[in-house]
Amino acid sequence: MPGIGEHPLAPCRTVPALLAARRARHPAQVAIEVAGIDTLTFDRWHRDAAALGSALRSRGLSPGAAVGLVFSGRDWTSFAVAYCGVQRAGAVAVPLPDQLPPARLARLLAACGADLVIEGPADVDALVAAGDPDGDDHAREADVAQILFTSGTSGTPKPVAATHANLTAGLPSHPRRMALAHSRQFLHAFPIGTNAAQTMLLNALTARPAALTLPRFTPRRFAARLPEVGTVFLVPAMAIELLESGALDGLDLSGVHLVGSTAAPLPPAVALRLTRAFPNAAIANHYTSTEAAPAHTNMIFDPRHPDAVGRVLPGAVRVTDADGIPVPDGETGHVWLRSPHARRYLGDEPATRATFQDGWVRMGDLGRLRDGYLYLSDRDSDVVKSGAYKISTLEVENALHEHPAIAAAAVVGVPHPVLGERLAAVVVPRPDAGELGLPAVRAFLAERLADHQLPGHLLVLEQLPRNDGGKVLKRQLVELFPAGTGGDA
Image 1 (tube, rainbow, N blue to C red):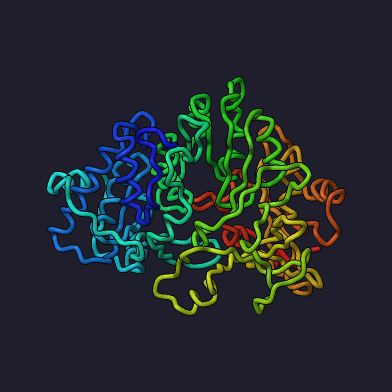
Image 2: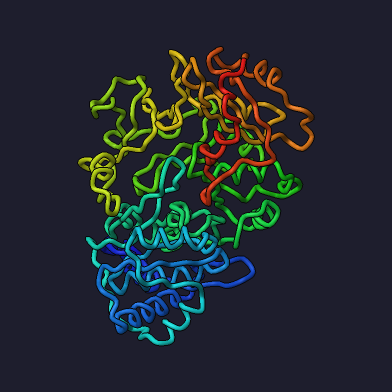
């Protein structure tokens, strides 16, 4: 029998309803802490969001209107209030980081039709002061609740619309089954406006521990908080920087039980290093996308299946040919995830029809299913077509990460007059690596890869260009190779 205050709840079908349910159970509990800056309890979050929503309604905000939310990493508590407050008003939250160039910010706001912008804590405080903390909740399950932009690594960022039903699908509603129950806090430093950050916001609403976030990721400040937490969320770029910085040296990390990686595939060599750094933690690779969420696969790193990104449940993943016909087990094709209450691109119906089909979402990745596991080959747009071969840059990058002198790596194709494209590697060396040359790198890779997978060119950089979500901007890397490079011997 449930104890007092632990009766099962009816499923919460909107984000504000999640907040109201959590406030009813744990009003004084901290939901979000910005390290050294501010804390937000569930009671304050609910009251301030209600007041902000009331103020927006009184000012004539139309139902379904898009509202830009422009906040820095210091302002997670104000952002959380604005996010739920906009939704309580029946409007759509559009999270965006405050470091965008003005022209780019204007383009993104125009792309989603956002005429109103809430920018920073001052705007939030003014709206909260003007509103009613007992104001009504106008959010509905079928309403669009949020618009996020894709990363833009393979083209112009697209606005992706998600309903409340999409955001709340599958989230726990029983107080005895709350996620991350082994932790008092979970730590992350994801920038506002990314899909990973939005997942953390929903975790703050539904998981047992409080969210602890840093204004921005720096290895030493992040590492300093690790002994306090049981769960850590990273992207691969953060994991690499953390491991390479030396910031973990001498820390007692035995209390960390889960290290989750998202946003990009976690190289097996990096996952193995994480298992050594966090001796009591499961290292989990989380595979999803802005378009597919909340659909995902999870894979606890297993040396027997180091390249797998998920143990696949029946009916959750499919791999097809270009026409959408499923391919046999073990054959490479296009990866699709099954998504309840699927998202859609805003204002781009052709792209929506191509990506979202009958509850399935095309991931833009090539991969294969084998023995119940999903293995990725590459992004469809990143595959290098060199002569008669289609080369997975992901496979070559994974091999480069095994090199003892390489901290980070990316692989691209550069134009070649005969082969079409030729493989080029861009690497970041470790501080004590010495000189890295192409012949030595090719010799190292020759023990792991086929001849056609060996790069013909090598570029050494101090860091790889990445977007806010930590993904490598490969188009910028291609531009670093002089015209005609691909034709060199």
